[in-house]
Image (tube, rainbow, N blue to C red; front, side, top):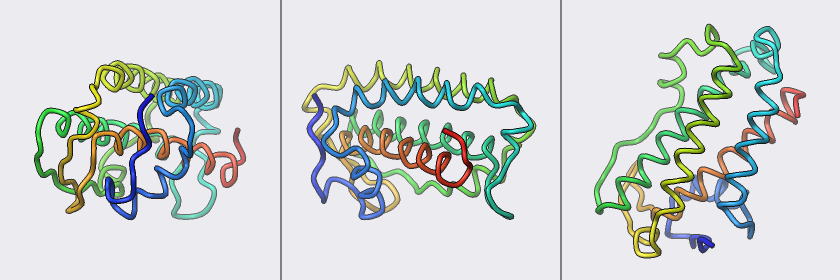
Length: 171
């Protein structure tokens, strides 16, 4: 079981994501979420997935595309930091979403891409040694441990699952 990171192992912004994991087994949570998100989103039609809960907000497809981008970014940071201390630039979610046409993509393909990405990331995360999980690096001008990014993967997905239910009315 991966030990929950302490404040100081991640940025103040990331505390919300880490907090959403609570005291749960993060590996188990990542595995369960993979299936929950896939079932929830792959059962939508493309028309349903074009819904945005308010003007100017992301559609379901854009939110899922953002989840894919963030999964890749957090996992990449965990990988890089597990190998050696380094500094990486920030990640502007709006720039990423605004420069990809997620709305033209098939919702089932996006859901499958997220599931496949998570499955691959689980192999990586499960292979991290305790020493690797404790290694650090700088991202967005803040220090993070590898373990923090593992918890952030789960917390970020939980955040969006909550939004899908509360604001989009799905789930």
